[in-house]
Amino acid sequence: MNLLIMGPPGAGKGTQAETLAQELQITNISTGDMFREAIRQGTEMGKKAKEYMEMGELVPDSVVVGITRERLSQPDCARGFLLDGFPRTVVQAEALEDMLETMGIVLDGVINIAVPREKLLERLTGRRICRNCGASYHLRYNKPEVENKCDACGGELYQRSDDNEVVVNNRLDIYESKTEPLIDYYASRSLLKNINGDQDIEKVLADILASLGK
Ligand code: AP5
Ligand code: MG
Ligand code: ZN
Image 1 (spheres, rainbow, N blue to C red):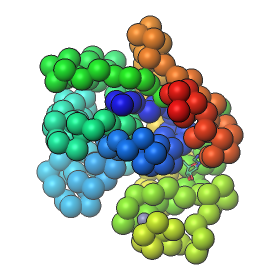
Image 2 (cartoon, rainbow, N blue to C red):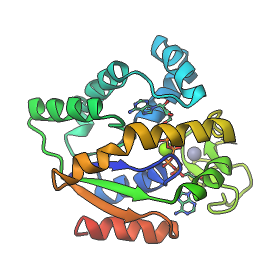
Image 3 (spheres, rainbow, N blue to C red):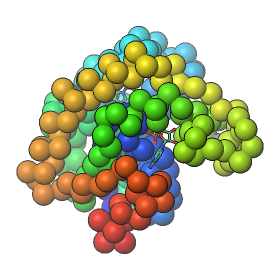
């Protein structure tokens, strides 16, 4: 199965993608995680992406399309993939369509997680991430068993530098102007699965699986 997961910053894409990819035995790819890893390693691409990410701006389409194309051509994507955070603009969606066509891959669905904007700020400012495996936690809604430690791998939890109020508001504005138009783009291709993301994490997962006929 080849899927996209979309929704505003803080909708729960990463949280759901982790479990969903395991459940469906497909490869989980997050462009945001790829950029954060490149920044951590200090690569040229990481240096380029950092400026944009810290302001909550989108990394230029050409850069994102390039790394996604390269990632999708790796052997572990042949069993199916779940793309989190790409595409984020119409230009990226068109590039993805071309890429998949060239590779002979068909997209099976686009999961769109909807959460009202007023809930997203609290989700993002309370989020903590595992430095080691990237898992998402929340100080109130998804607490780790041991404070500041990842349940999955024991890694240390940290706060993303773009999870402060000013940057979050910019990310939300950019989502509304650049990414939200993709909802119509995929609805018109009959691929869209609309999911209510304003429910418990487990209920959101169950709704996603049901929408996929699982
Ligand atoms: P990216 O890392 O993709 O960030 P984002 O889209 O802003 O989304 P988030 O990761 O913040 O939210 P999420 O939906 O994954 O939420 P999560 O599950 O963690 O991108 C970062 C940056 O990279 C971009 O700003 C851009 O600069 C660049 N970039 C990446 N891709 C790009 C592209 N294609 N083009 C250009 N630039 C790109 O959950 C959030 C919190 O809520 C957590 O604390 C979680 O525990 C909690 N939570 C989750 N579900 C629930 C629930 N149901 N109830 C209560 N709490 C919940
Ligand atoms: Mg995420
Ligand atoms: Zn971890």
